[in-house]
Amino acid sequence: LGILLAYQIDRGIKGHAFFESIYYLPVVLSLAVIGIIWNFMLQPGGFIQGMLGRDIGNPISIYGNYDINTYVILGIASWRHIGYIMLLYLAGLKSVDMALREASALDGATEWQTFKKVIFPSMKPVNIIVIVITIIESLRAFDIVYIIYGSSAGFPILGTLVFQNIAGEGASMKGAAYAVILFVLSIGPIIAYLRTTFKSDVQ
Image (cartoon, rainbow, N blue to C red; front, side, top):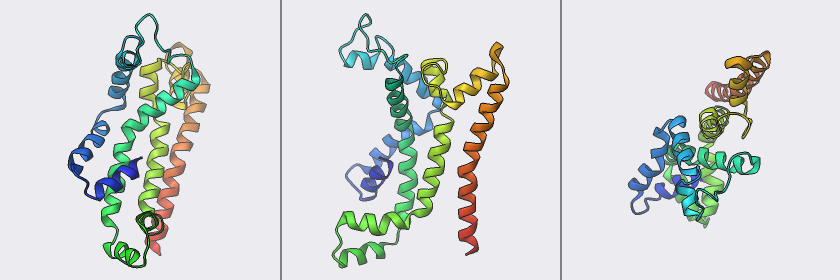
């Protein structure tokens, strides 16, 4: 979705500056604030429940249902993350040589073929950065989950498991083990990105 929005804005659609600002606006909010906003809208009697025609006495439960919890967290995190990815790809699209697009058009390639065979491959550095950032962002999604569900019971990701097993009376070595796993998963993409970057610089 981020690259789709970036491509449309890069084409200079009408009102592109307005759309760019609107899509990027959630990025400036912290994950905690976003969690509070969406928790307010999703709770019984909130905005979303009202839009679905459910009152306080007959709400759609988003708590305790793992399948629903998954889509809720993915949707909220994506809403915040798409604008950032859009900005990265927009910068990448601006750096693509216009001569490549013109040459592709002269060869009779369609707009989709030009994007798939010429533009997207030329943005390989941006693609790597996006992958690394997305993985790290997904691993640090503690704020949203904890504010909406309060514990790991609704959505047991590593961040909430670390907190649950380290903070308070439930402190145990299990929390330290979860923290080490979280560190390894976070540092792996960073090392891969740095190796790729330094290797390309040497060449």
